[in-house]
Structures are given as structure tokens and as C-alpha cells.
Length: 286
Image 1 (cartoon, rainbow, N blue to C red):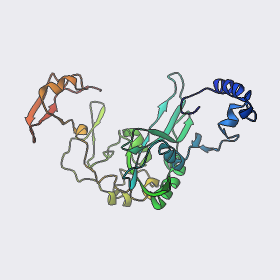
Image 2 (image 1 turned 180 degrees about the vertical axis):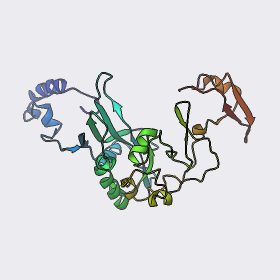
Image 3 (image 1 turned 90 degrees about the horizontal axis):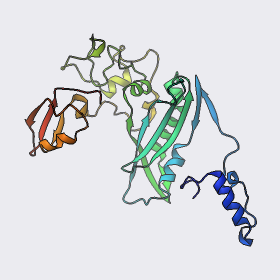
Image 4 (image 1 turned 90 degrees about the vertical axis):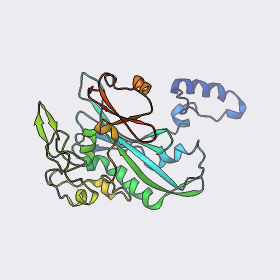
């Protein structure tokens, strides 16, 4: 109750003090930390150049279903999000959380948290505890409320810099950094561009065998590949928003579109099922 409703230790201690006056609760401890079973020691390990704490993927997953019923679920599909988070503008302190959620539920839970003045040097060391747990639950499943349920890591959600970091590939400013095809970029007007449209697509097999030396970091193998059923990094279609094609039912939909300038210049073409395909000609940083 105290954790669910964000009750402070001071408020909880005051409640315990009042409850202890009643004979039924005379043995209650007045220390909020005792009632919450706060651990006396926290296992924080060094991940150069900072520190990392692992919250436990299995425990966090079980907690989600302590308040939700499992109905017609044969396999838990877990989405993982990894990203860097600056703490202040005046310092280089930053968090790198590993977050999870059960598809299609909207509850987000913490799996691991890194803190340092720079991002982790070694992505595989940063992901080590998560990968060990992910392998275990994907191979053996989870027993939740007496039911043995299969698990799989369904999605890895990252922005472009975080994705290149955890996959151990060249950053988005590199010439061979496109994650969808083997095109070599060109540096045009202070930005990396990929004008070629007929380059061969990347595949999981090419990624595992490191067929493109210019794409992978030297002597580093992505440890995410150890997770069962997770070798589908490239066998998915490119999101339509990545190539700036949008589908709408009517022109009025454009007025509520998040891109501010899309209503000013665009090409509108008929699409299937009475929809329109929208190709914006003006782009914004949004």
C-alpha cells in the first residue's frame, strides 16, 4: 500500500505510531524501512566508468501480474527500452535505464539502471545481468500464479544512438551506419545522407556473421544475440514514419498532425481502403 500510493517514510512512520497504540498492533515496528523490507545492502557493481544496479527482470514481471489477471495468455511478450538520460544541464551526470513492459499492457517497470558521468564503455558489460535473466526466462518461462507461461523478448526500442550502442555497430554519423541496408553514406551539408535506394538489405545472418566489417565495431559481438528467439533484428519492415510516408483517412486528419509544417506542402496520393498516402515536402525537427 505504501509503495503503490507513494507514501513517504515520515507519513508511514506516523501511521505505524498510531496503529501501535492498539493492542492488535502492539508488536508493529515503528520503522518504515522494516515494514517495507528495505534491504540493508544494495548490490551495485562497477560498469566502467560508472555504477549499475539490477532490479531483477523476473521479479518486476511478476509484480505486474500481482494486480492483473492472466487471461488467455500463453506467451508473455516483453518490450525493452534502453536510452540515455541526462540528469542536469550543468553537469555530465546521466542515467542509462533498462526499462520493460508487457505487451499490450502500459505498465513500465525498471530492469536495470546505470549512473555515471559518461555512458557505459562496454555495452555487453552494461547488459550482462539483463541478458542472463532474459536467457533464463525465455528458455524456462515464468510461473505466475501457478501457471507456467512462456516468455520472449518481443521488441528492442531505442533511439538511433542507443540502438547503435547496444548492437555494437557504428554510430549514426558513420558512413556505413544504416541499419536497414548496406549503402555507404555521403557527407552532404554537414550531415550524413544515404541517397542510394537500391542497396542490398541487411539480414540477421549477415549481422551474426559480421559480413560488413565497416558496419560492426572491431572485435565486439552483440551479446543480445544470446537471447533465444531474439534474432530478428533486421527481418522486420521499416516503419513508414522513417521514410516520411503517412496514411490518413481524410484531409482533416492533417490538422491534428504532430508535424507542424506538413499542412503547408505535401503530395497526396490515393491509397487502398479509401485512404490517402501523404508525402511531406517540408520537414521539421519534430
